[in-house]
Amino acid sequence: MKDCTVYKTMNIIGKRWTIHILLELHKGEKKEKRFNELKRKLGNITPKILSERLMELEVEGLITKKVDDSTKPPRSEYYLTESGMDFVKIIQAIKRWGLKWKFQDEECKRAICMYCDH
Image 1 (cartoon, rainbow, N blue to C red):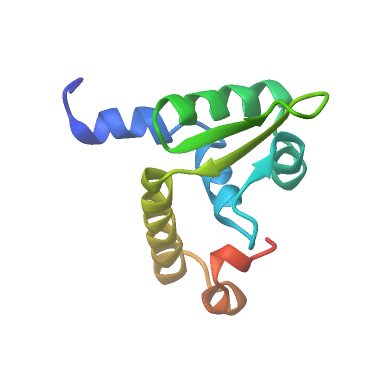
Image 2 (image 1 turned 135 degrees about the horizontal axis):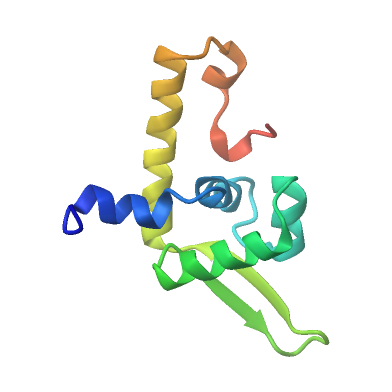
């Protein structure tokens, strides 16, 4: 099982909050998001968990951290890599599955996740 691609992939994206973070980085017009902005959007996530997940996602190549050292304190922003943007298609497929089999939500069906406030 340890060599199974599905198992290995789930070890990357299956942790709590990971998909939520990727979706939040996808949302909106602005592609870069700061730590506190992500924390505010995600609500109940602790700073420790958010920090851990961001580091894991960066190591796995799904996000990139951009640091602006010209400000005090330095400003860090996170954004999706090409791999992360490709994974958003999987998140959208999860949405379609949920709408088809589990949830009757006409507003969600019409909404584009990138512009969704939920």
